[in-house]
Every structure is written in structure tokens, then in C-alpha cells.
Amino acid sequence: MESLPDGRISTGITGLDDVLSGGLIPSRSYMVSGDPGTGKTILGLHFLTAGEGESLYVNLEEPAAEVARNAMAVGIDTEDVTFLDLSPTADVFVEEQEYDVFTSDDVEGASLRSAIVEAVRDSEPTRMFIDPMSELQHLAPDTYQLRQQVSSLLRFLREQDVTLIFTTQATSGVPDDDLQYLSDGSFELTNTDRGRRLRVTKFRGSNTQSGAHTVRITDEGIQVYPVLVPDGHAVDFPDETISAGIPELNQLLGGGLSRGTVTIINGPSGVGKTTLGAQVMKEAAGRGERSVIYMFEETTRTFTTRCTSVDIPVDRMVDRGTLRIEEVQPLVQSPAEFASMVRADVEARGAKVVLIDGIDGYRLSVRSEDADSLHREIGALCRYLRSRGVTTLLVDSAETVTGEFRATQGGVSYIADNIVFLRYIEVNGELRKAIGVLKKRTSDYERALREFKITEYGLSVGQPLRSLRGILGGIPEVVRDPPSLDQDR
Image (cartoon, rainbow, N blue to C red; front, side, top):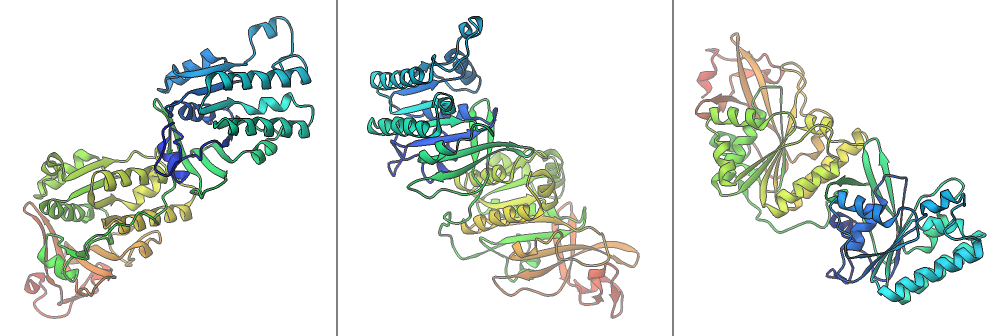
């Protein structure tokens, strides 16, 4: 049996081990409940094939050959699994017999127990899977006898140092409350309109991670994506200010961005929010740091072309490994899956700058229960990134090009340590752009607004626009002559 560092044993599913704070406690019994098609049997097969010792599959419903074929379809090889096949055969139908495993309650129960005991003693398994245990409910004459028989079976398996997982499929007529009561732990699998979920409803002897964790069944079996818990991931990182790559922008920010903070870049469509974020990643690449951008609203090709045309060579950054671009497909991932992707980039690939483009795309593309839960998810993700010393940039779109000023959209300003805003302004009949800083938690910053330009030579930030007022409304007024922005540069 493959042991984990604290003596636990693996379920064979990394994400589930994380939910269980390290895996299963050996020599105990665990119940997996759920409707048909939720993945109960696949979970049990992962468990059986994850250990180094013998494993025993007691199949009471599907024939062993059918189980093996289904397992192979999701990449699970059952060649080393011993089967105790107690499933019904075709003879039961042909001979017009009712299938209750054997022929009467007393004989059937005794025969089933004898078959399991004999198989355990013969194969000496360290892992065992009974699928489904609820078949035993049809053999027991009453609830008391059922509890006695199951309790006796579980005690026997514990004495043999067997770790057991068993499945149930509760119905209104045959509930599984007694089986849950007798088990040491229970997992509930569900299939909702937002995808499959797993909850740990009981786990004796250890804390577990609460919540509805995402489950995905692929051609490699089951993958579990735990709900992100920000606590417990903190690492030491330098308390320093990093450059945004533009001296005047650094002045606006009171020196630059503090490492390990969250910055919202807010502005209307086309004003240059993502390009500004790319500039920060370009500067990070110059320091030898890795960055990653998650694109919810744009393709890699368009983003690369746009950036290259303004002297931000994201193509070379990708080739050198200092930038990774990830397109997130609409309505495919849950918040937990997206958080798992971010964790892999941060913990395995060493990303120091993360750009999420943008909040609206995240809101529309990442499946979530409601707006409140979505805010909790992105808030948890940002707290996690702070604890890892990652500089995080969130692109937030303003609804209007000019007019009433709003710091952020959708009530996400509380997430930000810094808020940088970009706005269109009209001066002498010409459309220009302005940039300013509304908030910075870690230090003082410049309150003035400056002109912002995107040129073929890169981004530029001008001198403070002290000759104009009403800039945030979009149509500023000149307060001194001559009425020219150029005089403030």
C-alpha cells in the first residue's frame, strides 16, 4: 500500500486526497453515495489500482468483464484487481428466478458473508471495494439484522487491515442512513446543471475541506478540483516595489507596484487596459520573472499581434518561457478548476505576475452558483495569490466611454490593493486618453491625472494634467491659457 507522509493512503485521485487533508486513514470503511452516472464506480476503481498490495473488487451488480471494459475506457487497468463476481447471470432471467444474490434471506446472507470472508482470506487484500453495498439491504430481513451484518463485516475487515470503500444508491424506499452511520467516512457525488460535484459529509479522525468540489470524468478517469481555501499557502517573499516599466507611471503609483498586491485596471473598451497589463509583464520578463495571462475575451493571436505592434514582444516572451498565455473557454470550467490552473502556474511554473483579462469574461465564462459566490471565488483566488507574493492584475471594463465615473464595475473594488483607471477625454474636439490612480493601500501615490498614449514605440504617460478639470466626466474644461495638453508635458 502506497503510504502518504502522515501514514494516510491515497484514494488514487490527487484532488480528493487534498480534500481529505492527505488521503484515507488505513483499515477503515468509507461510503460513496450518489445517483447513477455520478462516478461512484470509477472512484472505487481509482482507489483499488492506487495501492501496491492486493486489491479485491466485490461486484454485486455489474459483471466483472463489463466493469473491466468500462474501466479501460477511462484509462484504468484492472488486470491486477481480484474480482469476487456476485452479479446476476442470464440464467436468473431465463429460469424466471428473482435475483436476490442467493435463494432465501437466511441462506443468501450466510452465503454472501462466507464468500466475502473466503475471498478476503484467500487474496489478503489491503484495499477492497464493494459495489454496491446497498444490495445487502435486500438480503437482511429487517434494519436491525442489516446493521448487525454490516457492522460485523466492517469489524472483520478492520481486523484484517483492509481499507474498504463501498457504494450505495439510496432510494425513498431503501435509504442508506444506516450504512452511513456505520462507515468511518462518507462522500456524496452529485450531477448538477453546473457539472459534477463531490462533498465529504463525514470523516472520522481528521478534518476535511468543506464545500462542493468540482468533479470531472475524462478519458483518464476522475479528476477532483477542490474549492480553493486561501489559508495555508503562504510563502515568504520580499517586501519590495516592482517597476511598471514606465517612469511616469511609477511616479503615479508612488514608486511602482508592491509585490504581492492586487491591482484592478479599469476603463472602457479599447482604452488600453490589457496593453497596460502586458507592459507590466514585459517589465517582469526583463527581470527574468515568469508571467501568465488568462484570456477570457480575446484570442492569443489577436493579443500577440496587438502587443507586438506597440513594442511589447509577447511572442518572444512566450518563446523564452517568461510568459504563458492561456485562453479560457466559455462555460467550461468551474471556479475551482480555474483556481487549480492558477495554482499550477504559480506553484509548479513559478509565475510571479498573473493577469486576468477580464473580470467580465471571468463572470460569464466560469460557471458559478450566483454573483455572490462568484465574488467569493475571485476574492479567495486573490487572497491566495497575495499569500504567494504574486502581483495580480485584474482587467475591469467600464460600461460607458465618458460620463459618470465609477471606480469599478460589479462591486469588486474591495478586492483591490490598487486601482488604476484609464479614461477617454475630449479636448478641442479630439479624443485623448488619461490615466490616474484611485487607490493604493501600501503607500502614498500621486493624485494627479496624466495623458496616456499607445504608440508604435510603446506606451507613454505624460506630465500631470494640471490645466484641465472635469477629466473624470470625459469632457474636461481648460482652466488656463493656452488650452493645450502639450503645455503640461
